[in-house]
Length: 89
Image 1: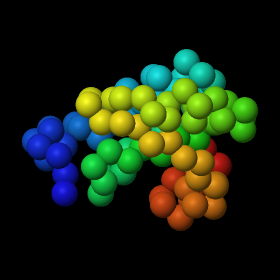
Image 2: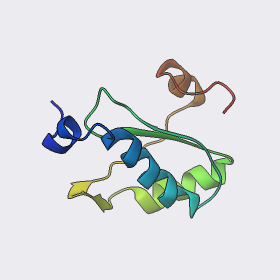
Image 3: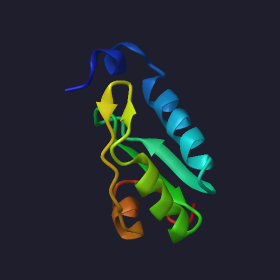
Image 4: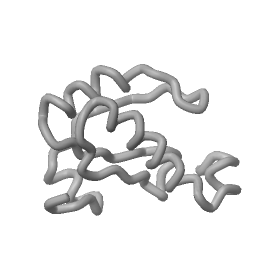
C-alpha cells in the first residue's frame, strides 16, 4: 500500500528519484536512477563503477530518509534489467 504522500503527490516518484540521484552523485557517476511506482519507495540506481556502487551501499544503508530507514542492497545488472531498468544506461 502506498504512503499518503505517494498517493497524493503525482510527482512523488520523480522527486524521490531526483533526491536519491543527488545523494548518489556525491559518491560517483550515476548512470540510472528510478523509483519503482509499484512500491512504497524502492529506488534502483546504476553507478558507473563497482567501487562507486559499493560506496553508495556503505553510505546509504541504514540512513534515514523521510523518517524511513534505508535498506540498500546490491542488485545484479540482470536483475535490474528484469525490473525494467536500462540495458546499457
